[in-house]
Image 1 (cartoon, one colour):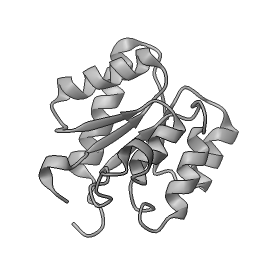
Image 2 (tube, helix red, strand yellow; image 1 turned 120 degrees about the vertical axis):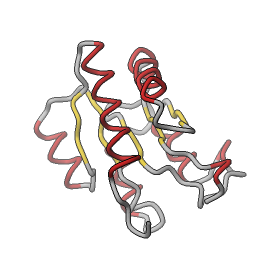
Image 3 (tube, one colour; image 1 turned 90 degrees about the horizontal axis):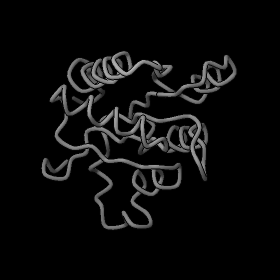
Length: 148
């Protein structure tokens, strides 16, 4: 993976307020060099699989972790997760479902499809900031992925 193009976090979020909060939290924690944002499931898949506007991106420069919202336009988070985990080239990328859904069926289905974690977004600003900082700290600094 070339360091200059390495994406550490792919943040897939369609809610502009949650997106802004997450980006500010990650910046405040100083834990990431590069964040890519996708605002719907199609954008996320295009980025991950180097298609559409990302056709020139090197596939090897894949994200170290994906923070994936469940309720997304065009293609929902569960379908994105399903496609990621079905492809041997991307199935080892950790995927954290970061969602406002407290529905048991969403939680169960996320884990069934291969999610590494399921986090319900805190409603309060400070709780959301802390949750995103903790996620980044764990997945980028503490977690030991295969082949490292």
